[in-house]
Amino acid sequence: MTAFSSDAAKRLAAAEALKLVAPGMRLGLGTGSTARHFVDLLGARVAGGLDVICVPTSEQTRAQAEQLFIPLATIDSVPELDLTVDGADEFDARLRLIKGGGGALLREKIVATASRRMIVIADSSKQVKTLGAFPLPVEVTPFGLEVTCRMIRATAEATGATGSIRPRQTAGGKAFISDNGNYIVDCHFGALPDPDELARRLSAIPGVVEHGLFIGVAKAVISAGPEGVEIFGRLDEAP
Ligand SMILES: O=C[C@H](O)[C@H](O)[C@H](O)COP(=O)(O)O
Image 1 (tube, rainbow, N blue to C red):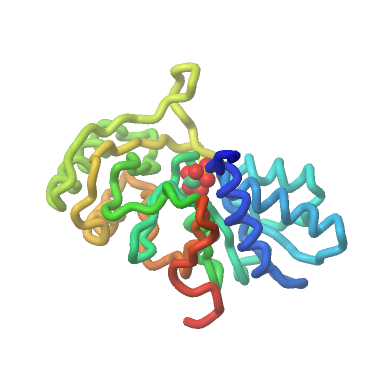
Image 2: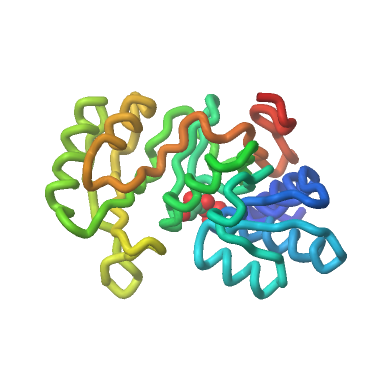
């Protein structure tokens, strides 16, 4: 028997999300290895005549979409979107997410919150009981990096989350720079006892541009694994 790979699961979830796309839609395109499958499948539909306009959440996704001749716009020229489909690093039973493993969290959050529906696609390994095993990415300004890291540490401790906070580096050992010219720090907390409170507090730190906790943003998660597809939340347009 052939083992069912996580990549096959990602593609299966992406194919399920593609069923939500209708002609004329304004779409947000996520970033990462799962969203990549969605963009790929969407590209095939566009080549077949599907008419959509899309806003990419990263330069990486923009490049992929351009290669597939998917019509693109900026979020400022299309500020209201019908649907955004994106991956996640972790999701829990309340559809709270950790995102930003690829460093795209700021644009992803702007695009997702400008959308009537944000649907997450993921392989089933992304489901967790408690968020935080995946290091929480936080986008910060280069100015005041040390001060901001100290504030993140103190504020996280106040919500019961402790661990090391490390500025992200590229494979070549240089500082990772986001598409927006900022740094990403990864918070290795292991577990987030109170993600809602942590999200609120992180947003209040001056040097924090955005954090990777997406709370109350996703309407549903399409999770795929060897057993098939499972839907958490609602795929329809109900408020
Ligand atoms: O910055 C990257 C994004 O938030 C991704 O959607 C997230 O890291 C999940 O990526 P992947 O689908 O590659 O696991």
